Length: 191
Image 1 (cartoon, rainbow, N blue to C red):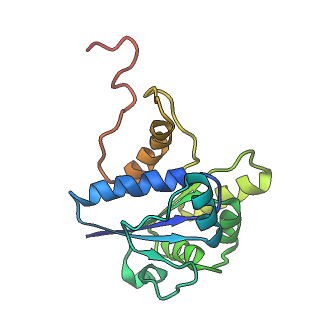
Image 2 (cartoon, one colour; image 1 turned 135 degrees about the horizontal axis):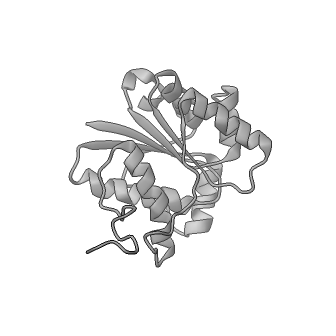
């Protein structure tokens, strides 16, 4: 069974986490998959404000200070973690090696165990400090996937636009999904 952690921080963009969790719930029906979820304190507030719906209950949700959560230790063998959206405050703490809650502790575990850590920052503009910290984390092995939607699939809704980022995250996790692919409907391509 594959084991993943999805962390949601207080950056704007809760819809990215919501769509990812919806996709993972669908995948779980066909693939053995264990997903653990953790929200920062601010993420809970932002989620309710932006999405105007309760926190998800599809997967177990852990408190941000619950250091007894299984993924707080490398011995639990969670294979990947996605922080979506990832606030610049979280980026800063990770780059400084500060594990002050379950999110930063679990991310630190991923880095020290050389497991997949995907950060989805949703901030703009970025100053040099943000960029340096992201570069540093990339050098440690984190994958940086900015919440920058693509348009070649001609998305016709906010959800479809958000999904262009979510589907890239799923690709990086190695979770097969049906999605528009570059070149599949390129102008001038023969059908």
